[in-house]
Image (cartoon, each protein chain N blue to C red):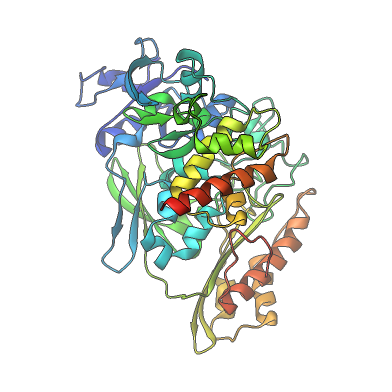
Length: 183
Length: 337
């Protein structure tokens, strides 16, 4: 362990460089607002946002599918934008606001997308569903999709191995229609 | 994932100093690097988080072009109204790549510096001269459907995976870089490199250098552009072949043509001599075929990817037709006109 960066010292010492955390330094201080609740955390820098949510905070609604950004099951909203939480090191989003499926709705107060997915039978096994719904929430907030074909294209980052795609598009289209009427 | 030191520099100078250290890697969106770290393909000693650097703006340039900050996300760039209005080819190229979630995290600088998706580069159990110089190339004589037909070497036949970079190549963007020696500007055609005898290097960035922005100058092509991407499924897949075309038309004559290919080489592929074949001519199938022949001169299949040569030829002719007609390929409607 003789790399040059050690000479810069840690946490403010050395040549004006600060905020350097060595692997054995006990972690990196990070503040995240998750589903509206502020969390002051000390995290190892190799912890992904997905693992933080599931393993440390008990928010297991967000699913680990491929863990490589190819399936979309881990989709959450970060600062209002849908992303793959499996490809994000949590420390790199210090200060961010994260919304997971648990933050979108509750069993006694479903998000309109959750209700629409039930109404349209838009899942079978349900494993991809939290990611589908978070992604659909992001899609609606983006305001770019207007047609059925556009919903399909802008939902292509979420795979459903049960093949519920047609009903997923139906559910999203219904909620988009309501949003459009409200606007 | 290996254990590493993590740094959050607040200035470009500090970031450059850290990145000059052996074993240092820059992280921004993380969509490619975190994946590679999970595979063990990348095992940085020091991860330099660039996200606190002031590189998040899209700015006007003096010549009427735009400067795209390195930390602006791919989505923010593609949906910026100035990019949409002035550089729709770039917007379409970006939106043809990856998925909405990935584009929301991935940055412009990261898009340039992403690594190849060659399976052998990813799989640490196999030889790869890019990952482990001198170990050999598993793709040569192996499974190579996605690999290069142009500019490859006997050490490496990997392709650069970006769509955005194909658009940037056609638009003759410039890459602004900050390093230990100060600022420099690299023409896009010179930014990425061919594998030659050192496939470990994807581009011309030196240790300690950071991409700060991508600059675009106006190119007056009106509606005469297209980004045509062909892949194994209709969305969310890397290109087998892609073609970016921008034509500056004057009175029905092609005054200037720009053509860049993706999915075929270690860098976006441009051949100025092929573009010159079109200059001063009216659009015609014959002229498009001649340009395609010149673009693909020297193309060599590796076995599984032999089909790419004919696929690229047809894609070039089709894309030139779309651009000449002023009917760019739709992102949503996958039918190819």
